[in-house]
Length: 428
Ligand code: URA
Image (cartoon, protein in one colour):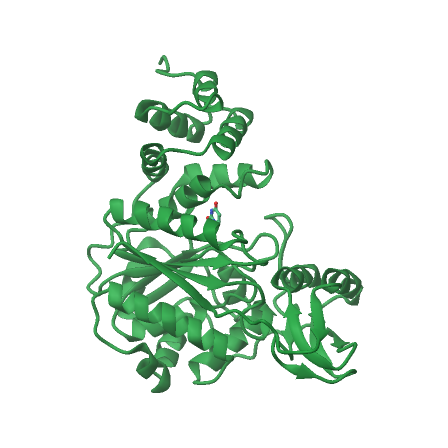
């Protein structure tokens, strides 16, 4: 079969600042998925897009072509209103864990197809896999049944969902083309739209530990994603939230599960509770339900759903969680106020302790991570414990300590702590 376009011509158009036609976009995504467009050609095209951007028309066609590269789930048989959430990724971001059962307890169905972590931000599946017996793989039938009966499923996305993105994201990771607004927006939204949920709430992180370090960039990313979602018929809202310091008091797989269970039990750190409730209110409202999520958290219904959700995937919600073999305490070098605890430094430390992976084939340690005894705004005395590092292998402590160097500032207060909820972007 003769091909209607050639890769070099498509790359040249974009390289020279031209606009790709719908035909060129449909062809290049399809041909790349089929292996006809080579990795080096897609690398060049990704870099041309990184440098020259995309028009609105190009971006919506690019996203549609990525969706069309695979299957689109049909959730029309689910009896509850469907609503999903996506976070652009942050350190200590365990929010999906209490959020999915909480929103399900309010009457919605939450289909969360998640990934594993790469780099300094952990993956939701890695966290849940620290629960004894829990399985990330779920068949299509079991997925739909669990959505209806329990109301929440957090599981691995199948290979059939937006396969073009799977290839392209791996390529962008090694060609310095990840942090491009059109490429991030189309990557996230193609997967989320293919997932078939009727509504979507986005948590777009802003700050030192996020993709988007500045507010203007995060606002542009949020409105681009909201526009793509709405155009595809998915009711979409974005909250912009701070990611200068880690969320909560733990970063690491089992450590974050334990903290999430505390939230479901009515306790937990104030920032994790605040963000969980803010996202839950948006999700419940997008799903058209008139209920207060705080009530479902308070009266234990969210905890009941959590236990059902874990048990439905083979996990034992009451089993003790794995604990790392070794600990190392970092003490405060001086008395004063904690002025900064840098999210990227803590995320990198947790990763080096074994909580994250460098290559997608690597295994992660369930017990490894960082416990934070003090956060920005807290006062500490010299010699008091600030952080506790957890690892299976004590040889990992030096690398983690090096990552933390310069990431903790103690001085005369008060700390300039930014509000957690920064902005809301929606088309309605
Ligand atoms: N997450 C994704 O799925 N894609 C991106 O491009 C960035 C973050």
